[in-house]
Image (tube, rainbow, N blue to C red; front, side, top):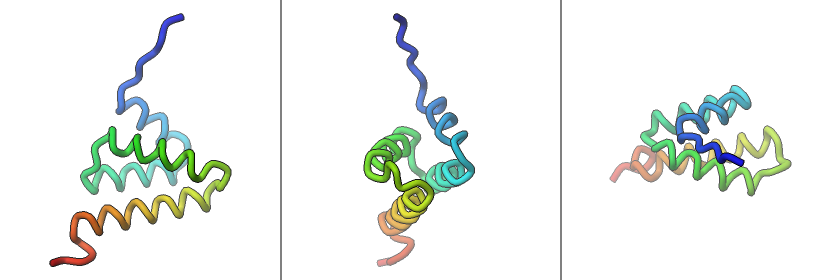
Length: 79
């Protein structure tokens, strides 16, 4: 049985194809400077935590990660 190894780009494309909300979230992460591997790691962690929550869970996770990105980069609370 051959194992198929997909690149990070292929995995992101597959995730983005799931819904327009997921696609928009991935685009925001890329624009915020996240690497594809970081985005996939976040998606993997969130998938375990919000499984079964549906759109509400994805919305909460999107807001949380988006806000965290701004906080880390210092755009929310400039020093």
